[in-house]
Length: 120
Length: 120
DNA sequence: CCGGATCCGGTCTGATACTG
DNA sequence: CAGTATCAGACCGGATCCGG
Image (tube, rainbow over all chains, first blue to last red; front, side, top):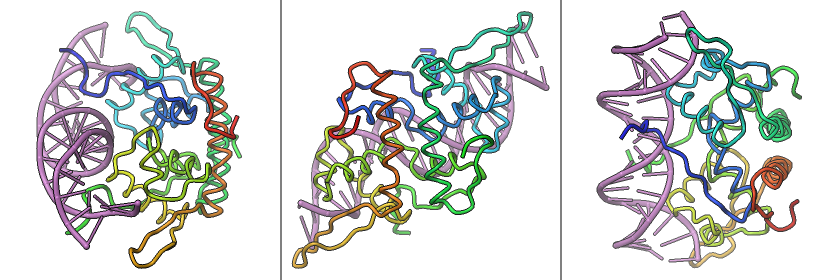
């Protein structure tokens, strides 16, 4: 068995759209990675350096999940040492309104929250 | 120590609004409870009966968290056996745009998703 | 170094049984 | 009906290791 003890992936099918969305992205980290991508980050190290401090094993797992879910895609930007960059698909970019709604809410209701750059 | 082994609550303070929001509500169940409340449910048993099947210990824990976060409030609707009902605060009702954005996304990108009643 | 994979201790989840 | 208790197993976070 070679699967990385962190959950391999099978998605539920609920009749509720919100439930489906949450089944896919309803954890502490996935949407933060999407946020980083929207903010222009694209490499593993950049995600890892975000101030929230995602552990690397979780990061690797979430990137895998997001890719399998069709939210991001990766491409090699260098051979030699093979290095990948990640970018949002259309499906991923369409999450921006969700993040904006979350940011709006937090700005109104969580004291002391600033916004990550160009969102408000 | 009598705390119910399911996490007692202390919230982070990140400068990112999205991160704060996710720290509070970024799990599989919390927003589903909010959805149920928006749909008009108000009692423990109604939440427990939702088709997603939240375990009762998780439900109790999330209700506690949401209350401490000021997203819901509970009130007794019967003495004798004391029974509580839950309702959204303004802070909670303001989550509706987030749920709607999620529903929109899922309707577009998750095949086979319907919407929970009056959302689209 | 960078992008992960692996290991490990501790926490949380999920299923279900139980109680007032 | 509205929760609590219990427990195994999944998952998280931190550290470390490794291949290129």
